[in-house]
Image 1 (cartoon, rainbow, N blue to C red):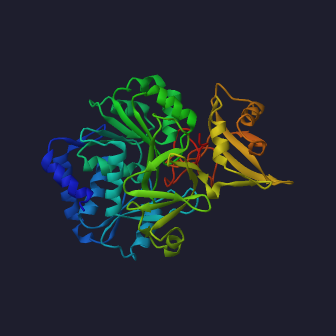
Image 2: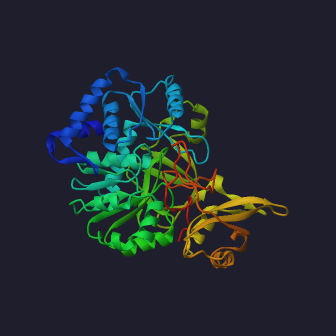
Image 3: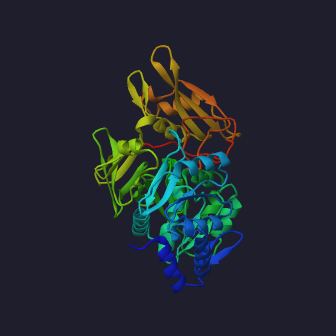
Length: 460
């Protein structure tokens, strides 16, 4: 089995002058990228078998360091560029006593939206299986130019590096989506096979704020993938209308499972559907209604937590907390998360279903459904929402709208307008915090600046 770094070496020989990685400020050819990786790997030669914790504010430096750590036989532990020194030191200390298997490539830390961040140990075998899954299912090619808009320290963006390098294609790295002009300048790159990965928050921002501008690139965008958090059906339909010839994929993946399944919703728009399993992956639904995954893309373990590992990974199967079902076509559909379910007077409510329904109402750009104490039922539903300044819907209008889409027990009893709902880099709702007056501090879980969705949407 070749590694990503071995494919980089091959492509440096085959396509030495082809752009391998581009940013708005600089670019490296395959020959130059390979040379930079080799030079950095020499400086890391004494770290073989050890975990190397790193971060960088410059995307190309980050990529070079990541690949060089692998080439040196060490384990890459990427952190956000704004990770505080205390977090850096704590992770270095935790991993200093770990012994890693020969095939270990990475330890990737989750964002911790439902608990403390966990160090997910990933093998080179899993990386290559992820690459093969994406190439086969989404059609990466040698002439693909893949625009990465998120932080490479998180699996959602990092996983796009793998198939791009294997194919000898080109990476275009951006520093997030806070600058829409930078994103559109990337779309101006002279290629007829542009592709990108956008979290649902970014898709909603483009649909609401830059629809006509995005439509101009309809013949250049080969495919767009979304994942990490669910995309609302209304946003799916809007994107299909704007980009009728672009393949639009909704993918099921996580740091623990790897890339499992994907679905082109520009063929048939089905909310919550993430399609068939990819070549190196399998899934099934447990008796509890949760999704279980198998195959070569699974994590190896959690670093420093054998008990948690045993709880979710056994019998060559990773048992998730995601609720789902398999439709008559054999496609996986996501409903929500088991640990997000709210009990209202004996009725089970998936908050994501309420959020998806609310976001279909004009004027609401983001929301979160939470549970609050109630003297009779024990708890009641409350909807916190962010509204467009020029179009703030009355709470009675919101309630009537929801009543047309949901069963009565799913319609929130309480409503509150807020100016911000906290999300992670991956566009997931931070259900530990919910609404907050502004961005977080410390750099560990900066919220995305754009509206998005919760976990799970209405299927069909």
